[in-house]
Image (cartoon, rainbow, N blue to C red; front, side, top):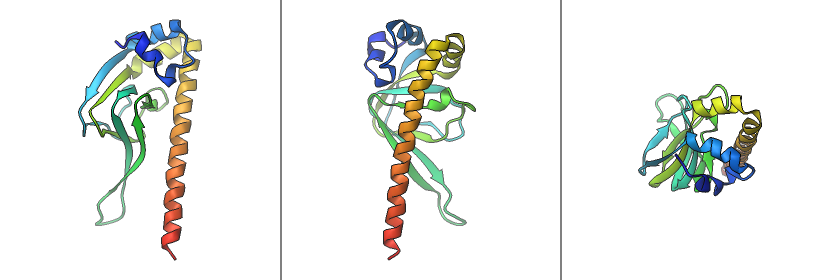
Length: 161
């Protein structure tokens, strides 16, 4: 179980009351994964919502480049201390949309997806706060993805000349 003090240190919980943090703390456990660990792949059932306490994680997708060509791995975002990943744990269909690999030895606070969804259903006010925080994570990830896409599109246009 993660401590209430530790959880309050993260931006994700900035708008949460002490009472709400106390309800979430029993659902959280601290996990450590070594550098190079694959946490999950695209299409895996979303078992946890993660907040990074230490380390760095690459969120990536693999795309096929055509017949007889190796797949290309594209990094969508790099997640570091204080950031959240695994929002699919609380958004249907509860399947991860990207893969995640630790770039450093990484320490997380991991929230059990099933228990978190139960709590969201039982406590609507807390559920609303959780979904607001998750929406911010999704919005940030979408912004980062757009920046990458625009950068790559711009580069491909420049190399055509």
